[in-house]
Image (cartoon, rainbow, N blue to C red; front, side, top):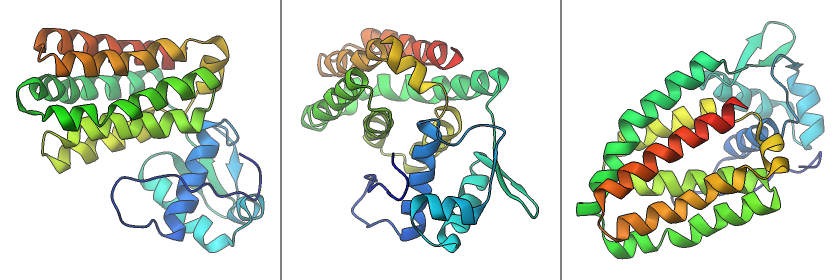
Length: 222
């Protein structure tokens, strides 16, 4: 992402994101791409100049990221990007497993096949982004896919809990993974999961989801 550019990252739902939300998305993208590094302190004016916006929405967006645990406020200096420990990654993955594996498995009996099939282009976008090393596109498509699946379960609060866990755990180390090609194996599991859901095979869905979350945790540990 080049300085001065605020990406128009897609969001779920029809509501147009506010300027503050767009700036927050741009800052998350910079975290994903490794442009903002854990432990470093960044001031709102410096970030505003970097992204070509005023300091006010940057300051507001950084406060939003602080509520998500992605940055800490440093009085009179700005914001420090927080690191994610191995213990935290284990805890986030454990909670995701408790929520996502049974919820996704249950979709074998409740989900409309047309709604599942509608997620196939998104799953393919994940594979394409992994193959080309487009980290921001990968994260965005991966988020749409998994939250799209969970939305089919009809529990909006559950979707928001998983969205928050993903924000906290999936920001670091992607560049190295993309360069090594290991991100593609995880990406292809999304298509495998869709096929298992459409085949109404709960055992296979459970196996793929368990493998996928374990695979993701192993990749992020690297």
